[in-house]
Structure formats: structure tokens, C-alpha cells
Image (cartoon, rainbow, N blue to C red; front, top):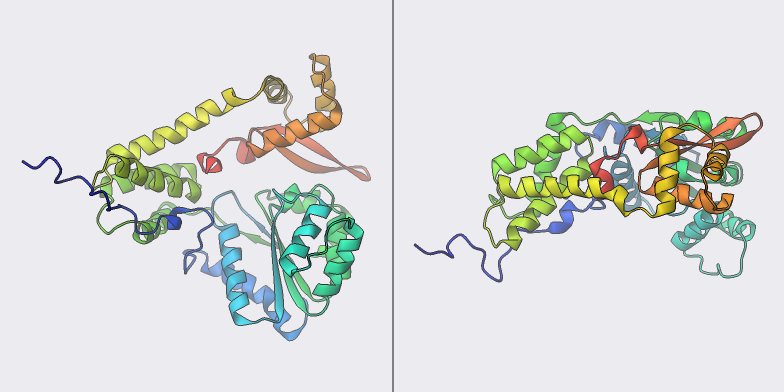
Length: 359
């Protein structure tokens, strides 16, 4: 019996193209989103005639293809014409007017940013974009701190389509009335994938990513079951990749149910340990939010101070944003009288941390 018969050679791999399992990978066709993409495309169509398209708000739970489908559509638009400029901004990373405008400058090729303020850069962006038509996509738009940026886009850019992507189905109602009246946005609701859709999406990625026949059927089905339970396709991609890496690390020629179970355990263990990695202040704040979920950030800071917290309000806010980034809390902008405030809620979107958030 040859003990090395079922082991990979030093120059062999189970993977054909591991990038196909990355969250940012865009497959040639976005499966099960043809209807949504077709509708979005129809809203962009007037731009080809130098008329503004419909502004859109794309909503739905995390990990169901909102960003991917929109990015894919922008790539097709670029292939179709050079006359329509496209801008895509992740507002989780670029959450202030200056950061957003600076990123626009970067994407438009305007390099003279140093020493310029937001208003100066905004004028440069408007000047460039008003030479033709444009599509501006703001992903995670609910993370934008200052709604003034919407005024600049909606009022001063002439031929455009603004697309805002958010997991928050109530986000439009939380916008300032003046922004809502100018935006006149249509809601595009992405529904969650069903079991068969998740299975076909993950099977397609397996076909792209792995050598044919290396993924055991039982192992694949276990991952599909777990991904369907979570409801976030990104978690399925993570599990496929981790199971493959686990098997390859053992020099195995097949990815079995054993590797699939190990990949799932890693995600569960990561989730369990995540809160233990917080600092003392973050733990204190998180516990207070847990017991006072739904309070405003200013009221939460008062509770924090009563319980011995020493951080100033601005530092406290930064801690809240850090907790939100880790999906421990959710911060929602709400209208109060003539102004806006922030409500602090325990848990991530849908009040739970999904495993897909750790990818």
C-alpha cells in the first residue's frame, strides 16, 4: 500500500482560482439577480440620452448581492460607453463629506487635493461631472455622518443617477425631509436568497475555484446548509475557502465533510471569542448598551458616566463607531424635532452578528 497515493504533490493544489471565493470577486453573471439588475439598468437608461436617470435606494439584508449586482452593472456600463462617468464609494470607509469628495477626486483623476477644503474640492468635482452624465453609487450610505453631501450631489450635479445601497430598510424615512424631497428615490428591495439559489451560487463558485471533483458532495451540502441557515452568501464563500485550505494543508486530494466541519467550527469559535477581545472600556459600553438598547448616544453617554466611565463624549462616540464596525451595536440616525440624533441599539443589523460579517 502506497501511503502517499492520496496525498497532494508539492506542486499540486486543490485550487484553480482561489480569488473566485473572495467577497470582492465579480463573476461573469450575477445569478438570481437578473430582475433587479434589469430594473436598475432601466433607471439608468435616460443617461444615454443626456437626461437624468431615476435615483435609487437599494435595500435588503447583508450578503444577498446588492453591492455585487450594482458593481457588475457599473462594469457593463463602462464597457458600453465612455460618455457616462461612474463613481463607487464605500461609505463605511469614507463616511464624511471630505472623505467622500476626496475619493471622488481620486476616481475622477483630479490629483490636486492637498491643502484644499471640502467646499473647494466639491466645486472641482461638480465642474468635472457636469461635463457629461454620471452614476454615483454610495454603498453603506446609512454610514454617512453629514447629510449635506446629498445636497451637493442632488442640487449641483445636473445629469446624474444617485444610487444608495443600505441594509437599513427604514433609512429613507430617517433622512432629512429636504433631502428626501430632492432625492425622490425609488426603492429597490433585494429579497433574501432561498436554499436552492444559495446552492447554485456556491456551486458556481466551486466550479470556478477548485479542481473538478475535489469537493466531496456531503462536505459541499453541509456548507450550503450552514450558509442557508445564516442567510449570507459571504459566509458560504468563507467556508468553502477555509475547507479547501484545511484539506490542502493536510495534503489531501479531496475536501471532505471533516474539513467542512472544521471550517464551520472556526467561524463559530471566532464569533464566540470576538467579545473577549474587546478592551475594558468597550466591554463596559457594550454591557450598558445591552441593558439600555434604543437610547440616544447622548443619553447613553450620561448612563456611561453614572457608571464610572471617564471618556469625553467625542471619544465615547468613537468607541461606539468601533463597536458598530465590529457588529456589536447598531447606530441609527433618527429625526428629533428639527435635528438629527443617533440611537444606539444592541447587536448588529437584525440584532445579531452573522458569521458573514467576519469575512
